[in-house]
Length: 247
Image (cartoon, rainbow, N blue to C red; front, top):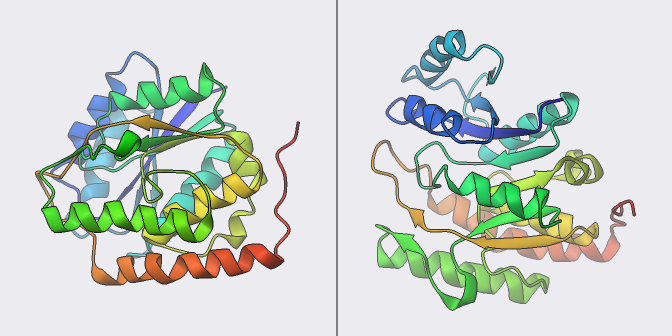
């Protein structure tokens, strides 16, 4: 049985995709990789298919019909990981904003230290560990996380973090069909739902580095979804019965 799989959603990541795949496969833990590509017109999937000839057992690809959103890409990846019985399931960006070496620290937090969800956190201990972001974006992201904590009432410093490790049981317990958001709010929704289901969340300090190659997918509508989405999550939690972690 394969132990861990790293899910990397892609859209127009031809400048980064081969390098990030090789960096993950160079780690001392033998992770598998699943690329979920949203019909990138720049040929990202073509590069992945070429690399699959070199890594036929450990590099996997889901090709989707269009740009369907980050959240749905991860849900597709989660379903694949559950079906293939991976014990540890990672979320990671393709653009090296997440250091591949930190996968080992997230893995250790779950595998060795007993966390159900390990979060690569940019904001632990009131320190902002972000490199090459404009100050406006740093402040927006930092205070957005504080706002989410205030509204939802749970103590995660980096609520919008997208670098994570889940035990498979978390994804099997969470009702994935009820995860609705696609952008930053998806990351908030997954953490909050895991928390409400009784799973333990551990933040692992990381340094987040802004991409060098390719184009950011961030836009104002994604921030808007996150801002208003937290009220939906809070309201829904008053009436929803969350499935609970098995003892």
